[in-house]
Amino acid sequence: MQYVVHIYAQYYFIHFKRKIKYIFTSVQIYVLLYKIKIIIKTTKTWTKIKIMVVYWHIFILISY
Image 1: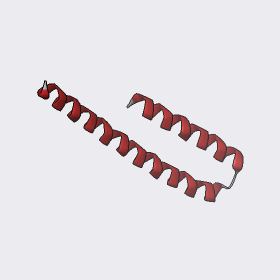
Image 2: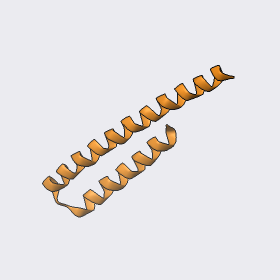
Image 3: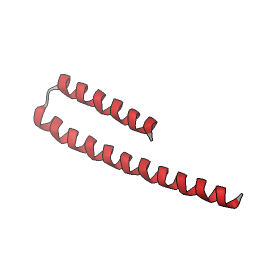
Image 4: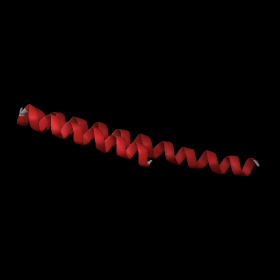
């Protein structure tokens, strides 16, 4: 029984580490997009990009 619990704990730990990695990645992407926004300064394109990033974020959180 303890062995099974250990395997589950390991699995969740790996799972958790992946999620943190993706959150960090998406934060980096947000920063990058913010820098791009400063360069572009067009609200319509920026909104489209932001929506795409949000969808991508949700997709990753669901798939992992």
